[in-house]
Length: 194
Image (cartoon, rainbow, N blue to C red; front, side):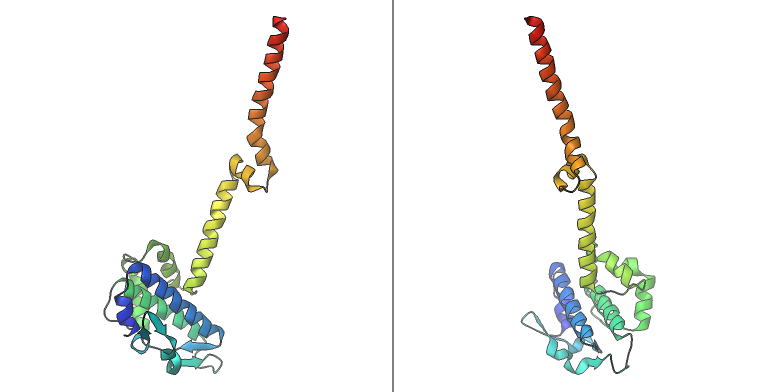
């Protein structure tokens, strides 16, 4: 079956996995100095595995100067394919006119796209070309950093972060003061009773 048929028959959670796999394959080709000149009808899927050998005749060397922006073109085309798949378009084709149309009507194309990918597609069609995998890694790291910073901004977060002992001292200060005050009051009370 062709990739187009395969993507149209995927559930959303499977679709994102397949797009991530395609993106990783694309990045690997780019890192080896190649770019892809393919159409979806040329990519074959066998038993849920994308047959990368179907790329063989559709790959050119970047080094030959055939297309210095071939990698960016490939990423943009794959993003277009992803949007078409999420919107269940039966006609997949790529052209500069399609990119312009998507860019002008992007929010309409994003309606069926999962929330975690909407900013990626916004970035891509606003000229910030990056691999989907790189975006997801950066997004995950940013989320982790935000959670870490939020937890360290409270006294309890500082206490448990083991990076700022001041937070730990602040958490213990009030209970220690109350316990000491209790003992002082108890001692004074005991002395008065004697």
